[in-house]
Length: 242
Image 1 (cartoon, rainbow, N blue to C red):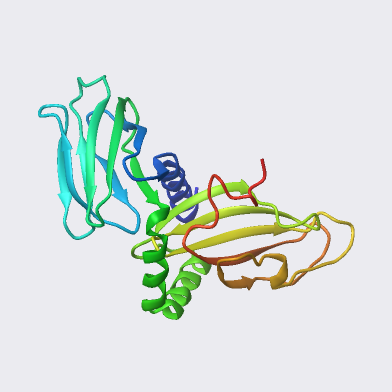
Image 2: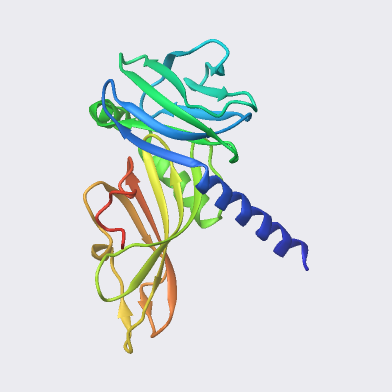
């Protein structure tokens, strides 16, 4: 087996492992969030568009480490902890959340909390950012299948629906607090030539669209690179096929 194939298999395994260990939860002020965590191992907890300023748990139930540069925490329970652990989080924007975390024999987890009340701040941050430069960097990273600083890179194989003329699957997602990049594989399943244009993929919140090949013969495939503001595609997105 060639070295390139071995490297590809290793990266694929790492991407799939990362996907399984990422939990994104939509929350509101004073919400109680239930989630599973790895028993005896580090678990990362982050609040999107905000920073954790305080985190409290009963003494002896869990240890908490703060990452000052990112405003997130890393939590670890003992190997003998089986009952849920309550953790109270306070953020710099004044929100408080209660987490009910159940230790399991699973790999380390990443839990990201998203509060819609921070959306206005999120939009202002986009306006102030060098968004054109960021979009160019996201596109370059997706085309070259590389990581990019500040982004979660998640390997996927999810169907996504745009219209009945072609079949599409999300192959990878690049996610940050401000932007989302999607690599979408499109296949012409008809018996005639298919012509693609940007209107096939546009929806509110889309920042940029790049189509690899616009004309597809029957059964032919291409990749489409979609860059969104924020997080348009997720568990509740209407475009995801059931």
